[in-house]
Image (cartoon, rainbow, N blue to C red):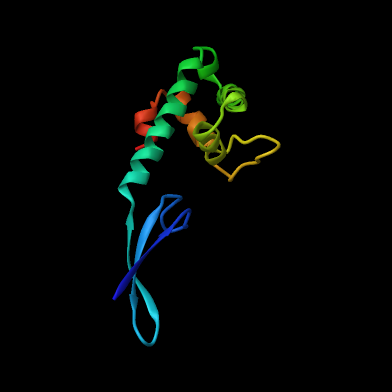
Length: 124
């Protein structure tokens, strides 16, 4: 007999939802595999693409030259966002005083935007 358990934000799945299939035996339970939940991954990738595309669209040529200028634009965009976009900002590392951040990858994203890498490639 097997049971499926959904977990969120496990270190082994890098923040994605996953299903863990566990074997029920008389001695112990052992995880047999981890399979990412495709529906969650496609929704989160869509939010990621949307947020980074909108930030990318607001950048000027002058701002693209400096990583810190890009981070300021990210911060100002995230300060006005709500809902899933705000959650995406939290995971990117562009939180606010109330919410904080999850550590994030703000510098990686801002440096990628200065090099011209688009949202489709960043959120793959």
